[in-house]
Length: 360
Image (tube, rainbow, N blue to C red; front, top):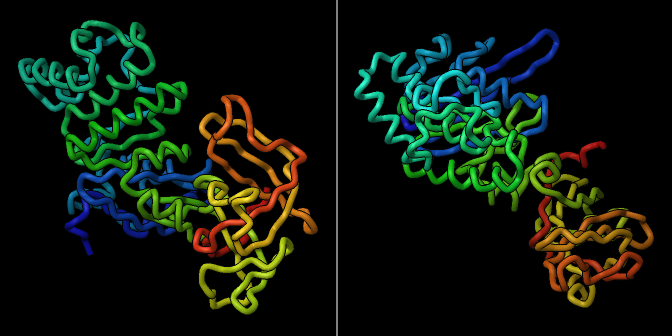
């Protein structure tokens, strides 16, 4: 059944390349005006999914609908989509204005309409007056703005973003994240973003679809997925997490590290508990917490706004990671390697997840 409230719907789409099942009966619905990210490691199926939406690959089974219309077998130029690639894919021998106007010209728009729309888009992407320049005369960030303007000028039904910021340096990438997100929200454009960058997905998305093995493991708002991961894979891929595996007994999880109170009582006899590093409390502040764990700091790293500590717990040798807000002079950590510390966390900040810790 077609979801008329959805701008883009993928229904049980699958794609196989030889013996490899790249996408496995995947379902996804993107609401009008939302930006949804496909996030996952290399080989998880996110790029293949995007290529099927774009029409570059055809699914072996399943349907793709855009605005309620079945687009599964239509060619790319009949789908009304805009695309922005990591490599920009600008025409090097065409000017900025000619690059932006390309889709309009292919659609038969008059020269007057093309010129007016090019000026409007250049204003929008803060490149006014550069219409007669060539891509090689622009910085990487400016080239990406031109690519974005070219995709938006045709008023696409859905904007597809394929690792669009991967070629930029960190500071420019972060500023472009804000710019693309602000523009997408202001124009109310539906967008599908492919990325392997967790921070990019977290900062730009209304919803994140975490993919692994050709499937979506979890779909939700960034804060929901981060705070309440459902699987051990999601807990460790989106951010970092300490995982404790053990047997459930009388409301606690019996692990190598000790008996750990659980936030709720799972139905199974065994469970995995996920605790984010920023939820771990160290030193005297952990004295009132129920875990009663002690350990030794084996490594300390200053990371700007916070310090990261690797801690080996007494008795079990279990290693965990803790983050602590920077509270000393820049470039320093308040706890040194070799220091003995007490460790704990509020019980409600632990999350029971399915699956085991991913193998290295």
